[in-house]
Length: 168
Ligand SMILES: CC(C)(COP(=O)(O)OP(=O)(O)OC[C@H]1O[C@@H](n2cnc3c(N)ncnc32)[C@H](O)[C@@H]1OP(=O)(O)O)[C@@H](O)C(=O)NCCC(=O)NCCS
Figure 1 (cartoon, rainbow, N blue to C red):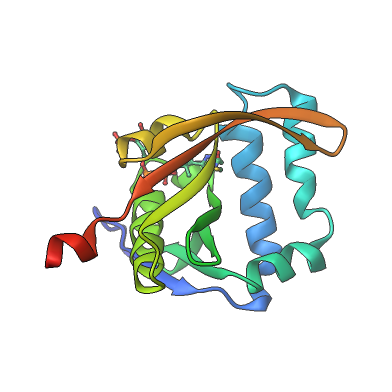
Figure 2: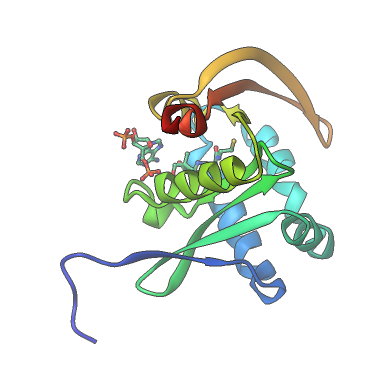
């Protein structure tokens, strides 16, 4: 295949068969993109959420989960829990910085709006806080959450979804 100057970003829905690949993306994303903000023990504890792949796949399948593809290959994913919570947002480090997470987040915000949400919430890792803040999310509260046997800091962030009001 010829190399292309502008690889094509696209999205598709999650299928159960994607679970092992998304578990790999999840682990690689945490290990590399989280390393500046968390200790090795904290990163391992965070990534252990994918150890039980059946449970991990069930979590993804129980939410609206979208997969980002680059030239057809899965490179990231995001999930919406209920009407208004971003539960997961992970991009493979080899594909970071190309707009995949922005595309996924835009799509989930639209789906949240379609579900009647007037605001959307995320518990942003310290590694993702600037990313969310640049996209209109406001820090509300610092948290310390237990993952396995490790305590990790994150931040509850919220963004108003103004589309409906603007359209009046
Ligand atoms: C946060 C994350 C999802 C961003 O994914 P991404 O596809 O690289 O994001 P995009 O390309 O859409 O946007 C890149 C933006 O994020 C910022 N960014 C954060 N980490 C980055 C990284 N390692 N590489 C490139 N950009 C990064 C850049 O400043 C850029 O901002 P700008 O476009 O406003 O200038 C990704 O870094 C990730 O998976 N992190 C680890 C897992 C995590 O913390 N997930 C969130 C759980 S709440």
